Image (cartoon, rainbow, N blue to C red):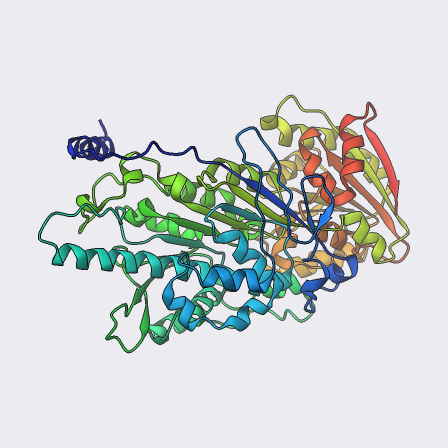
Length: 583
């Protein structure tokens, strides 16, 4: 029997031996899932470098019948879901929430109410206060700052209320002459895990938390923090898209872990302090990258992951391009009982749901991403187990084809070729076989310069091996290629000296180069982000070109992002395998 099983068994025996209390039978928890539809114009999305007027698209909500309503949200009903509820999008509603006991009195006194003037901040904060799991896909660059503010308020409120409860109960126990059963703790002190992508993004989160900390007096180890988390951007990004400049600014190191302890709860304290680089046993919040957390877990057991009440995954689309396996590994390690109780663990004050192994039902999961993709939905559905239900806030984003039309690229032709695969595990191999058998010879004979984009690095390696076996003249660039090699290959391709160029979607994500000169672009799978589909189409010169997209029945969501749900439905359900579209 594992140590964790022995530990939990001892806890269960302890609980059974305690004097039972007469209580009412627990009420059945009702789970609610809300989907808020938010519209945004094409022109705003194509000009993401400027601030978008939030009032243009945050007023429209849908009720159960799908009709516009001012404040009533539309509920997606399942048999286990309840029926009613509203999401307050107005400033006065959020201020009412700040004034009630669900918010820390410290925040009520010190929070700058001007942060609530932004509609996006109020909307996200309204979706967080009930501790339901929250999925926020399809957000734009202008949303990043406002989302950080809303989440920082929610995180700081949770930490302040948790610590105030523990300290008040400690005083009660010290003053009481009888034994009190006050269950207010977990296995460890840390209750919030914030996952982000780079050190610069971690810096932005810590700055946001500092701004909402009540009566902040000082930040301990701030100089050391600035030395490790700041840094100039290595390359000139003036010609890069707005989202690239936001995500890749500053220090790009993607392996870090930072513990934060909130101090100064005493009434005699002149102010509160944030202690950075706090140890595993004393930190209230951990801000780290998935890779940094996985590396730390290899060195020592991370007991602070056992008592989380909130997990925030920021920029999930970025994590997908880093290494999605790291995020899934972190999720599997979280909210599980430790093998051994940590030092300072108080069994008498352990919350009931830790004993019954229902930790995940009391842990709020928040996932934020610029696009929706199947792995994100799957991860969210498998880990979102909060007893308060799940909520999705999403925007009606224009499809990739709509973006292309808005740019006036009218001389492009699109060809969607559907292939069959027996199951999901063999889809990548079936995709490559279809390309080698039906597509490769056609593009070699019809076009002088062809750009081939593999969906991931593993597919890139396998396809490169197959093309080498066929003794085909081609060149490759990927996310690991040296900058000098990338520049040379781009020039050769533009000059017409390379007939085939093989690359990956991760290469485009990390560099966002415009590869000029292709007459045909072959996308081995539809892009998951409509913005990338638009940028691929901008590779062509004024005389236009052809885009060939390979898709299976498992690519329906990505096809919807690129061409719209109507086209995606026809491609998947039709008896034909080839579909032609013009802008």
